[in-house]
Length: 531
Image (cartoon, rainbow, N blue to C red; front, side):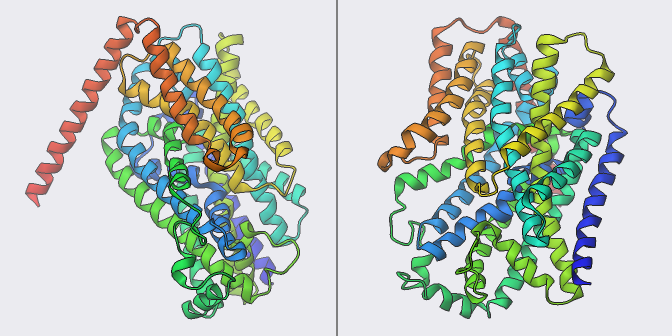
């Protein structure tokens, strides 16, 4: 009976997401609608879909798992989790503050619907070199990113129902691909709003149950103090690691996670799709608060999770996976009674939501790179609107299939896969987008050099330099981001200035942004005076 109630809760949630996909499909009359939702997102949907598509299974599985590792192995897990969260919170705020309005106005002016097309249109790249390299970068990094989501689905279903990991992963992928193929960008964005709500509820429920199950905060404190080498709570929560080894360089390296936001295609597309850029201030406040609160709770779950695992004998069990701690806790809730089973189903739905909210956006971004920026741009320029829609949907299915193959290894770490893909996007696109929006002297050769340098450096640093250890053990996003920025400046200055038409468009957009900002400040002042 309890298992039935749990399954019904999950199926109800999944059924509703498919319903939303079908409902949103009625608005898709062209590939532009399919990939950008007709630029009709409201401020709430913009904020929450951007952050839900960002956090993914990393929020409910990866981050708590890293924080829990401190308790298991007396490591720097807690410090790494906290500094990562701080970097992401700051990055969220700055991305909304600096990039959102400009890229919304600029992309509408250039009629761009994807990040590769925006870069190409911004710099007048008629040959499509920027489009091609940007599309390839998206494909290379988004497929493993999507694979991490499918892997999380497999782990979840395997832990809950004992279903074979591979079977569970394929079933979850089919459902996700189903509503994405039918509803496109609008379906992904609307379901992301719902999924962010479910994720938030799941986080709060798990925290409350975890504290109670562990015997209260006093018991949690005792469990932490029992860890060998931990002589006080302050030592456990030390932001330089339990042994003080997490110094200045690792902290700066971890904070660099925030730089990734400037180059995330699935987040930047939300900015491009908002209906009214003057409402982005509302979106910024909602997104920033949600990010900080949700990540703080996720880290706290990792801390509570150690006590929960210790009390229930999980730490010594074979096959214990720190990234599944929230699954173990939800399973314990489900075993209590029928109501607990429903609550557990809601928590599992929240985990599924965190996975789906990112994977659907990743699939669309990767699909648009193939269908819009490669096939249509280079091979099938006179494709009909109907054929283009089918091409877009077919590409989603193909990319999902490739992602499943990459996720076949169930021992892969969600946190590590996401961190690598995050670095790839942040370094390849972050500097290019920032310079495109704020430096009028940037030209197409500089942007091309920046995208290429950032993407290649991530691979080189990750697999060749970082393994050297010591001062080289830096998160690959930071050096790759800096080298990308240097490449943009150097190559732009060494090559011809942008054409006059491109400069005039840049100046026009900048003036429009300043005008909008001034109008908004005047309006806010007037409202404050009336109050």
